[in-house]
Length: 468
Image (cartoon, rainbow, N blue to C red):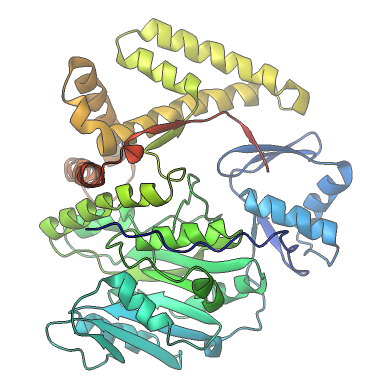
């Protein structure tokens, strides 16, 4: 597929507006406070922030339930902590309602799914169904492509007919829960919020694949809210369910139609590059129908992997297979090359250095040491994921690589034995490994096709970061 020219990214719009008055805030699960609340540690990626005494008092008030007021300095501080992923806004009252939302459904050859979706969204007065070249034209379609042009083109055809302020994209194989917009629309009270994504969960079913997808769907980004940022805990959101300001879509010229897969990731990253905010809101839930057969599911995972290369050409800083500190990388390199004493010694030495680095921030020695140790363990899991998803073809070529690949399979087995899910450990582990290998095969195929290696490279970072 030709890559085409990257779509437009609007220029950042300068100084950001403070958070609107009356916003209630809740802490992220990662947030920890020290020195009477003047030192904050948390967010994604993990950051360290020191506050003045008056700012720490404001944070204390917010965590006690007081909403933000109209003070510009307070609003700017709240914005900074939300952007860092340390605090999250709670949905409140909203002047927006269903009349401000137009539903756009891209579809090809799924009349039953469209019928179910339209039956579940009768509360939206305006609904646009774009038939992307179905073999049998869909009777529910309001617009039709004579030949398949891809989901990006179908979504663009739909949203360009919209006159309301918000566009809600839902795929034809999704079903929103009743009241799903009630947790989404209030977040648009903040003028900096350009898009909000609900949680997309996989519909439960009787088979092993359905039970696996119910817990490990690639569309399900978890139960914790987040500010969406590349290389963070929630680095993207899917357009299977996404609500966006129409003006924001217009500013970046919509979806890139040259991308067959990953067009939603590209759009979200271009929106973020304008300086606006994209939020993940798991209080709203949309259900998704998983692929019916193992073959179709593996083909989908492979196809998702092929999007990594064209995305890397457009966003080279956003797409790496792993992100970890040089120290953690060295620790695991020593362990995998048969030098356990050297690896453990380096891990102990670097873990002992972090308390000294954080001594001036009133973080207890035990806490700092624990953070360093968990950092090394977390890096091991990141490297295991990268080995299964990106590096496994290389790992097969040598003894050290095969040792690393075997070690990388252990987290899958541990998941299968410890999660308490309905699926037995053997089938869970087999599907987990197949999931990663299929995706990784797609990554390699895309990289070779587009002559780019960025998705196969790690990023080495310093830790902990500071808030911008």
